[in-house]
Amino acid sequence: MAELRKRGLVTAVIYSGPFLKLGKAQARTFGVPELPLLEITHPLGGISIDDVRARSEQAAPQFAALIKENLK
Amino acid sequence: MSNLKDLMLVPGAGLETDGDFDKVNALCMEKGWGDGLPLVPPTAQRVEQMLTYCDRPYDEIIGLVAPRYGAATPLRLAANAVMAGCLPEHFPLLMLTIEALCDETFNLYGVNATTHPCSTLMIVNGPLAKELKMNWGHNAFGPGNQANATIGRAIRLAMLNIGGAIPATGDMATFGSPAKYTFCVAENEAENPWEPLHVELGFAADVSTVTVYGAESPHNVNDHESNTGLGVLKMTAGTVAMTGANNVYFDGPPLLIFGPEHASMVARDGYSKADVKKYIYEHARVRLDAFSDENIDRRIRQWPVFKGEFTEAGPDRMVPVMKSAENAHLVVIGGAGKHSAYVPTFGATQPITRALKLRNGTFAKSVEEFRQK
Image 1 (cartoon, helix red, strand yellow):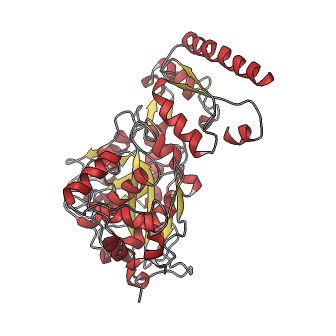
Image 2: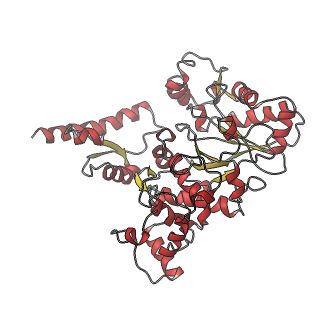
Image 3: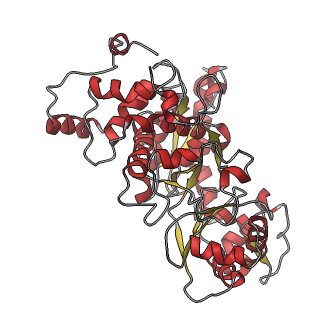
């Protein structure tokens, strides 16, 4: 992910709430501290398929907005 | 090997305090440098003493420790070894262990950052265990032995302070594990009726090795009644066959620890190590309907590790914990008593064995070969 971002591609990491600190720390570790982190509701494991779809619906518009922002 | 005084001039290499034990510990706690237990203050003098058993430049990178991928140099490792209470002669084993943990196939990032309660288990084989006065008998997993306790603790401190495996930041374990304070033992080679682990893996008996595992705490196999090897194996297989441990979902080998009395009975009845593994492979199996419907549908039927074997399987099909008849590690540890143990692993990890060698590549017969003249 960090390598793709360094190559200029639009990239992001999707995380659920408790993993924000890990995501930020890893982004710093891999030299992309400004890597966008898109939040979805925790948890992702142990949920129904409908709830998984709901999580993707949370993430999709955030990623779409990120792409638009990069097209400006 | 290096000039410590020069290295200490590097910005961030050290800091000044008045050296008072309580104040140093208060500072370390405030900075989050440690495991929560009191630390031996890593003064320049103590670190220098630790490095007397180092055969390489103090700033040479031994490995990059995940998840921060911090550079583990002898200097940094020595500071952690001092804090843990290690003796200088422990230091070559610490360098060797870091090297093993940083092997890519171990997957240290996964082991350190996961929500799973795995730690970094080290098992020592060969003459080094005796030389360092390690414990492989009663209470080998603790408490009471300085080498086992402090060497394992130093590795954990390196994971925290060098690797950034800090709770809720770089280590997301749901509830952690007591094995994350220290997790270091030697194999009981004297009472092992089979070849010890390092010999099984192709090393000469007089070579010293460390083998690292991304492993849970041991799960006990209590068997005071069986008086045949088959009975002990049946009880062991029953303990291994569980739904909640990772090994059933992954292909990383589980670890089987036989207490010497159980091992003796099993070997007496003609089972080799290979026979034991084959038995556990064939008998440590979980009925498909013991898993929840969601686990059957999402994991057992679909995950690549099962290679489609259970896609259409009925409820009475048996799911193997081991993924082949050879895919387990087996060691003998402990003292008297009718106990053995199953040590489930993180699953997405492979055990790594490294032999004790000097920097020039020759096998070291003793840690004294690392000592600076």
